[in-house]
Image 1 (cartoon, one colour):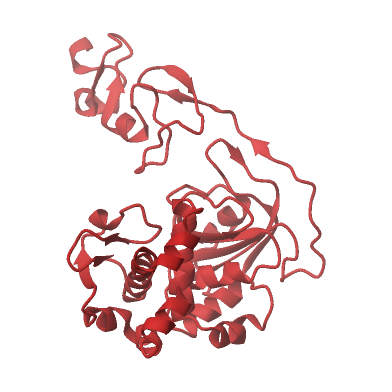
Image 2 (cartoon, helix red, strand yellow):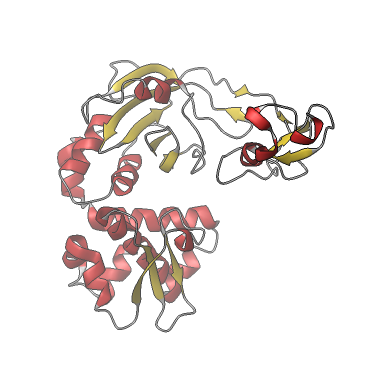
Length: 329
């Protein structure tokens, strides 16, 4: 995509790096729309979407995101525009699934915002630590997500670079040779994130390191990974690798061990257990699997099953927060 951009508009790269939104707003063949964040999901890994049915095509960017994130999102959506309108690019991407196409756009946006010389100054030509990624963020005007993407490109091992919010929920991830943790998934109880959350007052860039941590997937945990995390402007950035951890002198590959959690869950409303599979619907709000009746933790917070009549009522029908409804008292 960078080659296509350089071929068609060789003079714009520096202007995009400085202020992508202003630069793109002056292009006649695209329009930039600032939209509500919820409307901007569109299946992308960023807070935005690409509307190729608009005239001209629209790069939709969530207005509630930070300025750095809006720049990254606009460039990500520009990547989709280039993919759609360049035959060579479109042909090369035919074999990729949606996640692969999104990752290509993430890489394009990150490389525009963070050229090689800036990255090399912070990573010293090696595999980055968590502190290195924070330094890259502080030395540039790029978003945390852009720094995560560039860091994942420099891993010397299979692994992931993950950005979590202050509660330990995945905000963004970029990977090399492993499955990424799902965006919005709760990783607060994995060893590295749990250790970092216990020390949320630690200065930015000062790393928390654990000997072994995991990535939590829907039905199982990954094998053991070397892990290091550091706070970065209110978010937690972590490097998770199978070997060649840059903060350790010796970090060989461990014996693969997948910890599979019970693939069953219980519903407090139905009082039944149900199997959790890869096709089980997961609530985007609470991150919990829905039972066959569609209940999740959100439903349980709104409704309760009476211990006498065994009917389900709104939580307001249970005086004093008890387990017996008003009709049965």
